[in-house]
Image 1 (cartoon, rainbow, N blue to C red):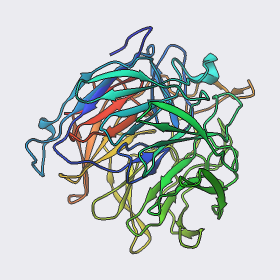
Image 2: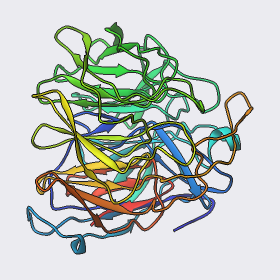
Image 3: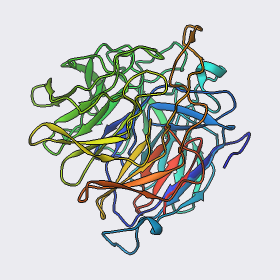
Image 4: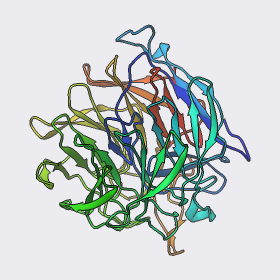
Length: 447
């Protein structure tokens, strides 16, 4: 589905499963029920754009503003078949947007904040949005709420224990990266400034720890630096640095309280030959230090990470390197915190860069939706205005509207319903009803 002027299609995916975890800027936080991956900038002229927390992509068509949903199984069933799932359209955004964040609030509504309204900012001169809006699952509609003090994209949004949402970092998509943060208060519908970060961050991760603090790690311009935001004081202080510089990694809170940070690439935005990492590390809040753990089975950046019910972490999709027409892994892998080892988890139905991967808790299945399988060699501008001759720059995708289910018990992926519109680097938020709200570019509800 493609629209014009006002917006993007939104879909919602529904399941009979309960609520799940969160992934902000590619990281997992227990109190925020949206699950996403992370990524960088990809764009084309006249592109239909979808977005994910802290990551972006675009595919053919004009930006349009909607959502869709899908329901997995029925009546609390713990199993499902592909024929039971479907995506259905839901309300349209007030402002079309991509490269935004989406956060489930304690009242059951979803806060959608920032991003851009249009094509890729680098190639089209788009500027980020300060506006935000709320999705009400009861009415299936979006309504405007207060605006942020700073327009931003590539930021993170983390639900805090006090019910407020921490918006951190981001940039303008051109050459400005921010260290500012602000808080959204659902009771007043307004944003207010809070203490700034120790460094500017863009395409970083934000993970709510068991002690209530937020670990902010990696991102563009940080050189591996990490810090902790304390909601009680409203300030951020430096903590141990990562072993390597990571842009667009994933960060997942483990049951033991540690944080798994995996993959990513050297933080130079739009770099044609940047190092992509297979390495991973663990952050220990008790010591404030990162320690190396085993490597992934392959290099990955712009991938997704999902905490499973058995305590393992599923890593899906991404890209293995900035080499044209290659390195788009169809493989997935599992991290076992007890052994600190990665093992191959199966082969996906399609290669996916910037996918979302949402745990459906009652069934224990994982919905992997959207993402690009970009194989093109056309040039795209870098931030300095020069041409990047051989990027992974999407003009056409093989199956960006498709989705699939991962069954941890069987260790395999199976195809499920396709989304109504083309989606990549979108947000996917698990609602209290068990439906999954997909927002950005062309998006919707999964039933």
